[in-house]
Amino acid sequence: MTSGIRDKVAIIGMGCSKFGERFDCDAQDLMLEAFFEAREDAGIGTNEIDAAWLGHAMPEQGMGPTATPASVALRLPNIPVTRVENACATGTEALRGAVYAVASGASRMALAIGVEKLKDAGFGGLPEFNFGPRASLYAPSMSAPGGFAQLASAYSAKYAIDPADVKRAMAHISWKSHENGVLNPKAHLRRRVEMDTIMKAPMIAAPLGLYDCCGVSDGAACAIVTTPEVAASLKQKHDYVMVKALQLAVSNGVEASHSSWDGASITTTRNAAKRAYQEAGIKDPRKEISLIEVHDCFSITELVTMEDLHISEDGAAVTDVLNGFYDRDGGVPCQIDGGLKCFGHPIGASGLRMAYEVYLQLLARAGERQLDNPSIGLTHNLGGFPHENVSGIGIYGLPGA
Image (cartoon, rainbow, N blue to C red; front, side, top):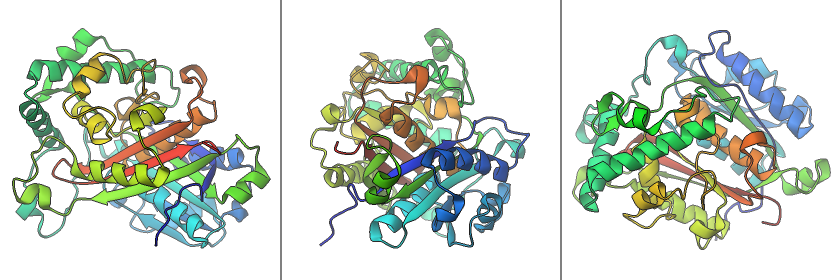
């Protein structure tokens, strides 16, 4: 019988590059920037790492389809290095590989690193994904804003919520993230935006305006994980973070196949969250979780995710958002680092970047944006469209939490 990975793995070091238009760097440079920070944080030598996972979703944009560029750039000691890709949840997939290797006993100390170099392509959005030869049967051609705009319409219809109230909640979500991102020196966009500006911004795909959409970016993030016993021998008790749960759920086609899915939520997020809470021993996430980092590719995604994570009641996220429950001084602060709205979305790095912020907050290292005494943090990393996607959920806490 499976027992899960709760408290079987510790994160002893994390690093994150500056995100942005990094035309001065290639992908290997960005990996080094994140890796050097993580290695120094962990207090180890490169030769102590015995396995690594590279998250890189767009090989045609810089590094090719193998893991060799990571091994070469970081001068890893001829260890196994595996490249993984799972759409926009690639960063979480890389971390999952490293964590599971340590939890299983196959690795003593493993590295997860994610990177993407997208600004060189010159596009305003992500390059095209190929969802396979049967994609036309269940994934008709659509833009990402177009797909998530339908999520907003379905959400309003299901709960009979005035679309104007949903729009105001989405604007508050964007406003909140930009307020937080100003305090983060590693964010791509560090500028406050007034609510009136957000509400009057050009429409991208109704009801999603310009500030409801995240941009693309260049960046890298990484984590070094090991057993709790090794962590305790290397660091002080409260100088590392325990992995409480790490779950992934992937669409099986049902959402797009018939009417059992109402289009107003993300099925995989709900399933992954339930499994993660069970694994972590979380009974009441609204009361037990100190902060969350979620996949705010669009403001409506963050709004719906509050309910999919079972923090807001179904149909109540609009009220919670407008009441400031997810603001930095609210009940469960969300996107305290600025989120995808302010960091952009270098696909392979985003999931690890979320874990990086939770890690800093739990260890009280977040500087100006530090929260008061957080003990449990959650990350949510989503890839794909509302009807066809993968959701990754991570839960992290201090030793003993």
